[in-house]
Length: 186
Image (tube, rainbow, N blue to C red; front, side, top):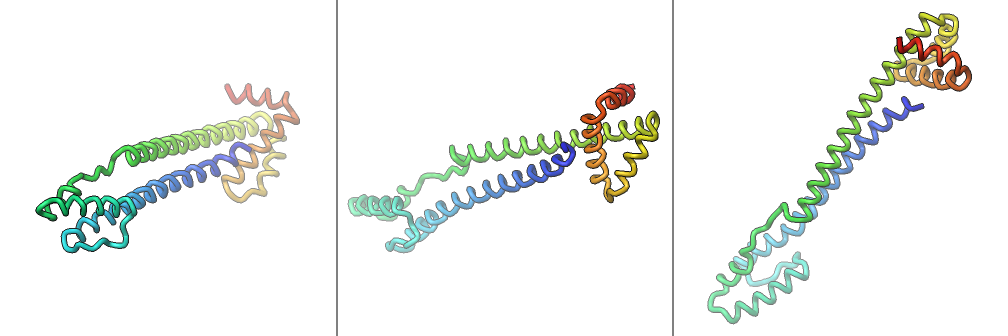
């Protein structure tokens, strides 16, 4: 049974990796969608005194405050330049945290995939040792098992079926399986 779950776990790992990449892309696009109207506002401010319709309320309120401050100053161009002299930090708190989380998730998923591959190799090695031991020491039982395995078409199906047979033998014939395990170790 465990052998059947490993390919599915690898598919789940791949799905989680793709999902985390989509999440990061969506977050970056959302941040850009907020920054982009601000940039258009700054460019528009240089050429016109009208407010663009795409601005959020917080920017509109800032613009109204800037207009009041501009009325008091002698140069409206200096006030507009001073109001938007802040630099935009793309890797501030939230975006930086999301980036770190993304890297950690990708690292964990890569480690899980590597671990799943090692588990597949270990199970395959046990199945090969079981097959060799059965052929060498218990040829009659192996022929019965081989008859059950002939129905399989691929190597993965054969491995899964052999693993099921091993589990069933563990329950039905524990003494025989104990002898097989001793001989497999040697």
